[in-house]
Length: 366
Image (cartoon, rainbow, N blue to C red; front, side, top):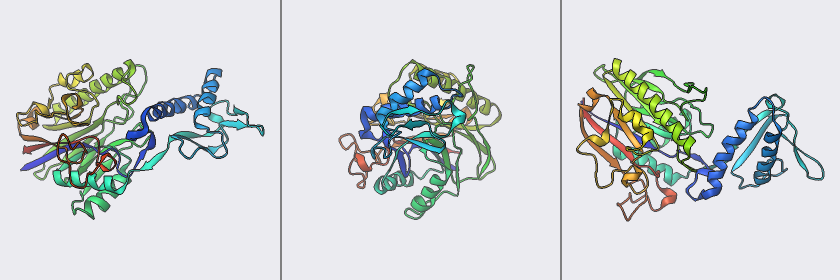
């Protein structure tokens, strides 16, 4: 049975946080950091003086207490019960809530529509690859992935997948991992609540395990992942979190390989093969697709212009699955870099490219 398995960071299907747009620049990076910081502050039972000062400082940037917030604000405040901020008639802003129990609400990133042409090109990449199972990274949620599956892959390309699943993870921005499969999904295990020794959550999204049943009855265990990004900086904390995620994912993968013959761990790991952060996976006994002789060597990367420093998407596999591997490839034509390769004729610029990532696929003779 000839089978193709793949992974693709689709960079959201229909909407995406405006702060994460390519042209958002430093303001976008700051907004992503501020969004996380604000939600961490307001989750506290009691707001200390330093918390209040920081809430007021960030309010000056995003004008959360304004009667009509700026239309181009990258971070928005949602209030359901009570108020976080107060504002006098003279316009002086204060913090009305004393702690989490005083109000119900949160901060969210403003979202922009991805645009039909980009969504079409994302589907075109998937259609051209024709994988039997696709790990999808950066999808909004299951209803959105199913809508894309039926209304774009199905209606436009005639290639809807019969099985679609996403488990909402730890990222409040709507950036999750899931799968599209031609084979039934018979079991699901989430690691969304796995924690480090200090009590912090291990995974930025999740590291779910999907038990997929092949046509001949054999099980295939698929483990999608999306590690901590370098977006906005790659400081010590960012590296430490990615290292912890690699260690935890490696443990999940090796434990799975001890009981299941065919195991695939893939996704966007946001670091290069030689990085210290991904060392636990390299030492796990799993094998990455890049080790195969057919892997493209001229441009081994899976992001941007495809250079070696842009190799951040992976397909790790158990030894029995690796023994069945016959070919590896990268579908780049959905990404707009015309000086490096010829894109699809429907990809005419960065504004309508499918993703800034490339789809990584592997063919097996199972």
